Amino acid sequence: MLDARYPVHVTLRVVTAVGSLRRRFSYRAIREATLTVARRETFRIVQISIQRTHIHLIVEADDKAALASGMQGFQISAAKHLNAELGKRRAGARRKGTVFPDRYHAEIITSPRQARHTLIYVMSNWRKHQEDLVSPMSSWTIDWFSSAAMFPDWAEYGEAAFLWRGPETYDPLIVYQPRSWLLKEGWKKSGSISCRDVPSAQR
Image (tube, rainbow, N blue to C red; front, side):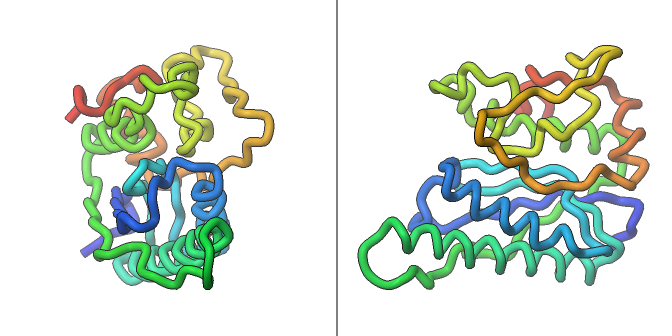
């Protein structure tokens, strides 16, 4: 049974017909979904990354029911806004098809080591998929299709923490600072996190 002490790594895949999620209009649609669930008290998105065919989230939920309800709200909102954006770009009626074909995959995080690995896996997932080798992303330090800019503990910050400045028109994804010990302090027991870490080397 899910306990509020334990964060959860969630993976959501989209149907092929949606196309790549790493586009500005897809980003806007998913950002709207993060804004929708931000109003909830029992479910919080702490980190999120948008890849071409799937979305990774690290969430905190009070219990199993809160997780299910929060993810349902996120998926409904994301599907609604993605379909609306796709409808603007395609001839004919607004798209009403399925966006998420399967139930989300959830992995409960129970140890500091697992928490650290999951943070790296989600925030630096673009490096796993070698998106960092393609222009203009090859010039990025962190992935702007993620909430990595909201993470306050990058090793590169040193003693004087700062937020990297995003693109001029950048609107960040809406996430919470964590409340769980594992995501606030626990993961640090297993080492620091660098923006240069590659997830495949951590798993």
